Amino acid sequence: MKIAAIGEEDTIIGLRLAGIGDAFIASDVSEIKAAIEKVLQNPDIGLLIITERLAEKVRNIINEIMERRTVPTIIEIPDRQGPIEREVDPISELIKRAVGVKLK
Image (tube, helix red, strand yellow):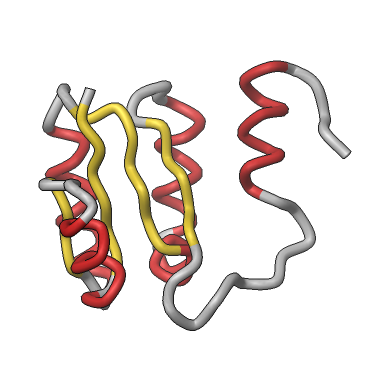
């Protein structure tokens, strides 16, 4: 399975240097949606990395994908501005959904 990424230019340059070929630079909602659509059309992609701030712009789409599909798994990472403060940790929620156990 392949890894894809969606983020702002600095993050994507770093991920491309790390070997992720399916990496899309996006900043507005239409670019994010177009990149997500390309990722979903590729059955070889098993993991989608997206920066937190971009994911927040299309939260309803991200949530719908996570509820309806098991592949690709979506992981949100901080961008160069740092992590977004949240009440709920998305990684803990992903583990809870996958395993059925809440981590503390």
